[in-house]
Amino acid sequence: MTVMVALLRGVNVGGATRVPMADLRRVVTDAGYGAVRTYVNSGNVLLTAGGTDTEEVAAVLRAAFAEAFDLGPDVVVRTRQELHAVVGANPFLDRDDDPTHHHVVFLPGTQVARVPEVEVTGPEDLAAVGRELYLYLPHGIGRSELAARLSRRGGPRGTARNWRTVTTLARMADETS
Image 1 (cartoon, helix red, strand yellow):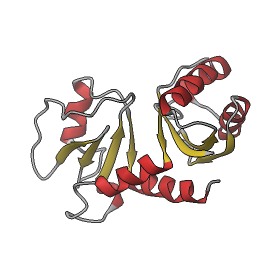
Image 2 (cartoon, one colour):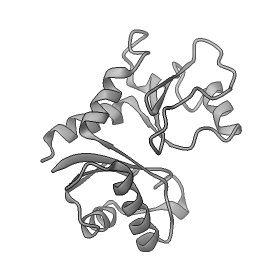
Image 3 (cartoon, one colour):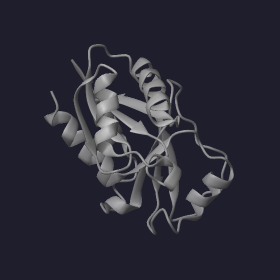
Image 4 (tube, one colour):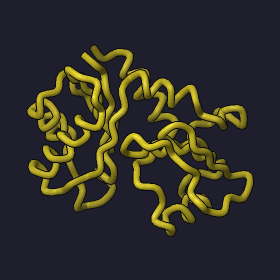
């Protein structure tokens, strides 16, 4: 079995996207996946699958969520190994170790990420590594000019997680079998 993490975009960030985690776990289990666990109330699901095709798992989950909840959140899936690679690739950890300053935008699909054409002013920073965008936001995402610029430009289509969530999901993936 392959351990995977499914990241749902926009779940439980507003009234229209509320999904109880027990219902989310049920839908993932009913879709045929095992060892289903969630982390915090924002669309982070650990699961096991018989194959290794993350795009197939994402498509199955998108369809299952659309049917069960009458909403179609974007779903990005990474294997445990891919998630550990994301943790190891953060180019900004030498700046500080405050997890509230580091964010990862997980992009869907198999294309390599590219840095969006957006003005980046220090001390904030942005880098593309693999299929992810890494953001260094030392004043937090809520006060970030870079995050606001990305949002205004339509930003990359993906789902962002703070560093604490990313590293916790990696630890939880190691505990999942």
